[in-house]
Amino acid sequence: MELRFEATALVVVDMQNGFCHSDGSVDRIGLPAAALQPAVAPCTRLLAAARSAGVPVIYTRYVYRPDYTDGGVMVHELIPDLKRGECLKAGTWDADVIDELSPQDTDYVIDKNRPSAFYATGIEPVLTSLGIQDLVVCGVTTNCCVETTVRDASQRDYHTFVVGDAVAEYEQDRHDAALKSMGMLFARVVQVDDVLAAWGQSA
Image (tube, helix red, strand yellow):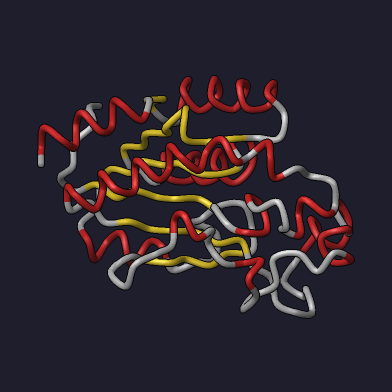
């Protein structure tokens, strides 16, 4: 399984103000945006390379209805501060992608209310219509939305590459464990420079 730019999409997972900006809601409830900000610059490099090589870009955004009726167990039982802190409400600045990675009109934005980009979203029809077979995945957080998306992609037989230096997690041990787990059964773990080299040569 080798990196290529044909039949490939870049998936940018949840690089939103709520998670990655110091004024974001998730920071306010005690999950520090500073831990995730190291992923911003590498994701920016990947984004520029994808657009240069003609690789489609798909963003995911973790968003909730204003009344949080779609929050499920995570919001109502496991992390109720998400609701109390009015985190990631649809239509707000908090739910938007950070300015550094702002989507263009030709990109695809997939909203979700669960960790996986494949759960109850429209991502699969988009991938099918584009003829996508390979996914290069970056974003946050490594152990939650990135890993869940990567596992679901692999189980649908997409050739999946997770960019190890373009993902971030709140705790280093969970970041490391997630990369090890994904690399064992679900994806190839690569680096930004690997992707840029493959796309640059192809382009």
